[in-house]
Image (cartoon, rainbow, N blue to C red; front, side, top):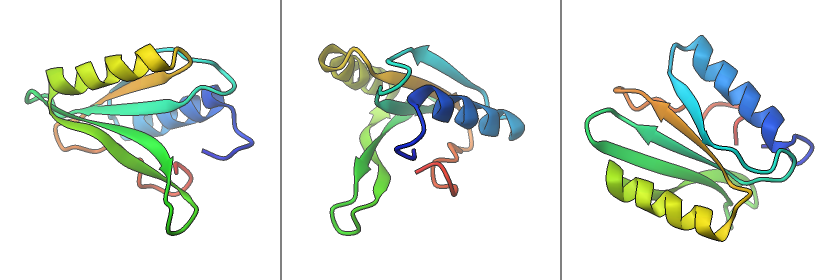
Length: 110
């Protein structure tokens, strides 16, 4: 996410991009529209999930999506709940795709 983009603008663009690929996605927790951190939960609809969070790559200094939690969907949900306890401004987007597509590796989404 570019520093110039608000969280809400980035989320709207991300949801639109997912929609164009027929990948269902939902906002499951709304955070601060201008400065909230965004997490993306990918549910593969088989009881498994992965939660991605944006972080800085210390080697390159660039932003990158890193795995916060993965495995059993209930455990991933618990990790997200713990994060929300620390950060009430946190946005959580849930993506549902059996193929595991989240598009976070596409240009413009880091």
